[in-house]
Amino acid sequence: MTMDPYDNKPDLRTTPESPRRSMWGAWIAVIAVILVGAFIWSQMGNSPTDPATTSSTTPPPATSEPATPSPAPATPGAPPAGSPAPATPSTGGNTQP
Image (cartoon, rainbow, N blue to C red; front, top):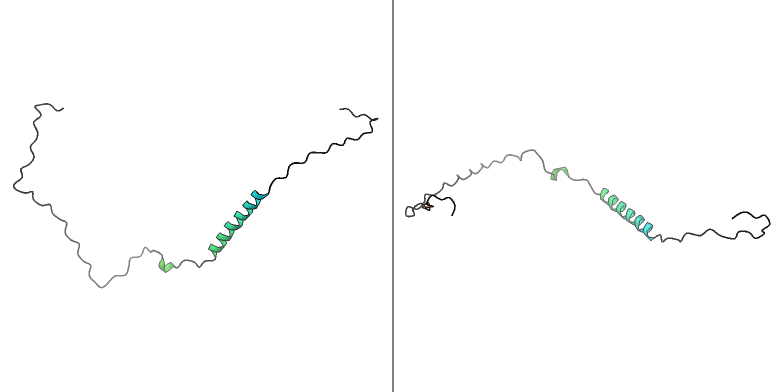
């Protein structure tokens, strides 16, 4: 369109407004951040761990009781005298059945 200096009707068009979005997503994000921060803050307020209850690499103190000897390993028993050794089956020179 061209500008007409003799046209006395002004341009009455308004700019379109963008539809308002719901802000519930932002509120959920804010609440989640606050909850995580509160949990971390509550955990930081606890007393530190007691070093006496943690594991150590130092050996335990020696006791006055002697250590019990470990049992000797078991020896295999002899096979019964009445059972002969299994026989090798005869294949007739063939290695495949």
